[in-house]
Amino acid sequence: MTNIRVIANHKGGVAKTSTAANLGAALSKKGKKVLLVDLDPQCNLTNHFNKANSTEHTIFSAMNKRETVHPVSIKENLDIVISDLDLAALELQLISAPAREQVLKKVLSPVVEKYDEVIIDCGPTISILMMNAITAGTTMLIPVEPEPFALEGLSTFEKHFKTMKDALNKSLTICGILITKFDGRKAIHKDIAKAVENRYQAKVFKTRIRTNVSLTEAQAHGIDIFEYNTKSNGAVDYKNVADELSA
View 1 (tube, helix red, strand yellow):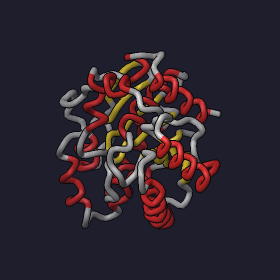
View 2 (view 1 turned 180 degrees about the horizontal axis):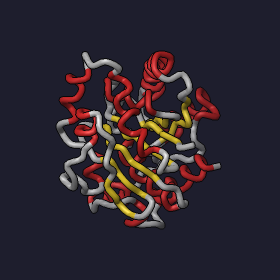
View 3 (view 1 turned 120 degrees about the vertical axis):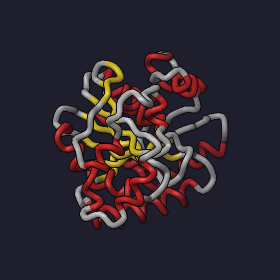
View 4 (view 1 turned 45 degrees about the vertical axis):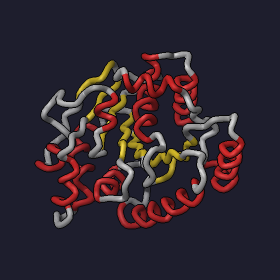
């Protein structure tokens, strides 16, 4: 059965896109066939791999026309369904559409079985697009930055998640809360990370994604962290997350 992992948080800047890109690459290195889906109108995942304008078959065109998605190859075992700025307009078009939360699931369904892992990168808003991702997904991964009010933000998002899950996809589970941008030299980071682990316990990944300039540099070069610097902390951390997911 294909794992369809929704990467989401209603807060921006918590490394959702970096996690989608590099976790996808880590899983592909383990021999998994991985599909990335850029469901963010900001197109950050598409831009991460320099795939903007690489095809006219975007996630917007597929969902707008109710047609099967057309993935683009990034490298062996790793494909992407790209996004573009038109995706923002889809929100308005779906407001009055019948079965509006089912559109993504329907356009993905013909290709899902070709992959071991599908990773959906959501934008930082609770929207119709996120509801589509939740309807299509099997699990959700929540990145969180260890900054003040992280627990409050997680609690708020958890309430929204439960409401959407109960209404749209009761079988959806949280596969993990991932602490990102972690700097072990900062006492506040250690304190907040510990507080998150105390509250959510087994739901929190043992691995913390450490602050690492190589992650930003890899994105600037249009490649994943493993192609850029396989010995970096970023590569080590995302490999460990992939190992936890595969355990």
